Image 1 (cartoon, rainbow, N blue to C red):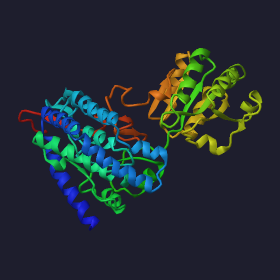
Image 2: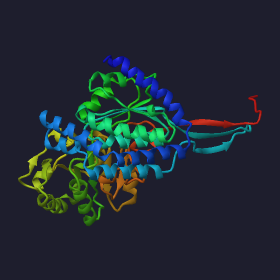
Image 3: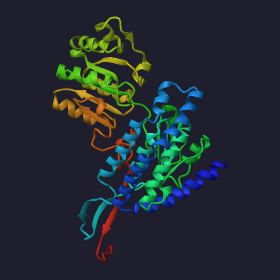
Image 4: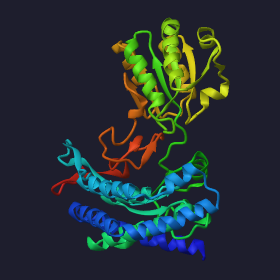
Length: 418
């Protein structure tokens, strides 16, 4: 296969399809989502057979148990995919929404209209259900998409793509509105991220190595986050009960997510009283603590934290702990070491909470809440394509609005500029 020619063809087809999807009605796009859900339900045996091929190949190629688990399409996961499509169909459609209308002294009316981004390229690994999630969000927001899944899921993704094509056809939309790359050649990724004439934005979902490569080499805008080095700061004005509850949840609710707390900061004024209580809770959950010098004095026997620990996204039952001097010390630490994902302050002092919200430069900043809430569903977005730590139109969890942009619209009645 000539990969460059193949990817150019996909790009041309996506660009043409994007225009049709953008002008389609909400009802038509919802029909496509519902019809895709029906097609998935009918194709359960075909999906299982395709997935079995991927699982067999994965075992033969030495994929670990965690990878195989993410790869597997169980009946329950197919149910979840179907339910996800139905839920996205019920979400409010942002496309065409006009806001901020106002009259100018000249007599014209100026406002903003929400519009699709166009063609979205999505690069991801392992999980076939991402194919449905990504396609549904792009379609609902009026975009066309090119999906490049991992080679380990090629058969599963193609089976899912066939169902999506049926859904699009049933709604009268071009099947090329959602295209799954059929080659496992790695050069396909390089082509996809360097086609600004066809691709409007890239969304990488995967490991840090993949995202670093995409960010470095892409010639189109990228919506992404690299790390989730999230902090919780317990202020001297914190309610101890709230502090214990939030800190334990932020770390131990799930270890392998990007919104899990990786560094705990505790004000020096309360450290001697609070740290032993926290340490006992974390010990009960088998969490290893790595502390600064002051933390070690209060909690003898814990591991010394290195400079690298303050930068680390563990994704494991390990937690870095630092005693800081006041709110300024906490903000300085966060703005130095944070990956700008999610940070939280525990305090009963409204003035300090406001300062934290204003001065901490991250995509989600919280007061008296666990960092685990940094999620599209929890924010009321319905679903998310990913999380962005960039300072572009989409920051934080990226839902339907993040897959659209705004353009100015002007209404006049024969007005001319004097």
